[in-house]
Image (tube, rainbow, N blue to C red; front, side):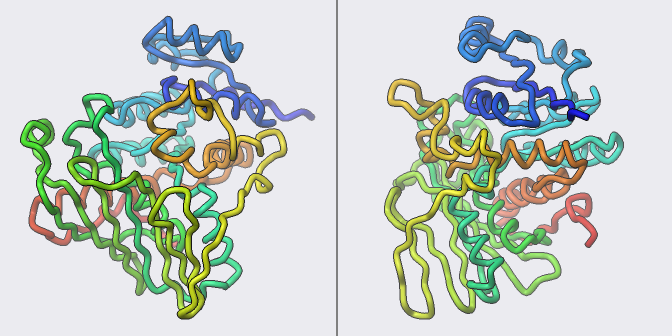
Length: 372
């Protein structure tokens, strides 16, 4: 018997357009519908990719009984509300980062997935990037030995981005550095302590009441002797764009390149070696393997800020789509599922709260912790 394909609707067609051809070519998916408030923008994308079902009203889209799952790619303030609406309408949810902007919103999403039995996956790019997959492969082969410490950073200049980014607390968008330090050891955060440093322009501070140029957080991993450190900056800090993570093991350590497009380094004992990170398209269905190296936003005349600054997100997009669709097809939990997504997201939310309280230790809420 032929397996029914999963009908996907993509919400938000800026960065979201990058995923359309991946779903169109994935053997488990039917790229069924798109949603965008701007009719002209939606028609431009819909015509380009041959998508007939088009909605300018998200609530109307959710009434469509043919839609199995939505993939949300809208501004961060909309993520929680739109995810909750979809779950309550009986749709599975994939959502770009972060899961939400408050701990309470994260709690509601977790509770709704458990009430409905539906799937939620936060589409965290770094944990499916070729760099992460390279380190994960070394770790699973035992080449790193025992992990001793993890560090990650995400430094970015947000000038020129849409206005809702202006003055955003750095740790409120921390999943790109929190995700890998939890995903590699398959761990959960237990508590955090964070310090703010420096000061952004006064006109930026007033929007969110967040003064810090840089926030640095220590994370204690639950049921582990490990801790991790993550650093985040958004404004008034001179640094080339960098999403990075470093892993220090007893046999080998991995350090992300300091300068974009240069080689990362693997240390064996005290001997450093520059390494070329391979592509991991071979882990994917043949139909979508090419999307690890090429996509919608890979030409000089058709680019998106999130894609330019993120270096194509490490070829992660088809891996994310494949993880989500396989979870639905096999009725298994994706990584990260709702609780894991909440744990990753709440680290950042609580880290900023800790920074505003001078580094006070704050524990992750129980709903973000999975029983083993």
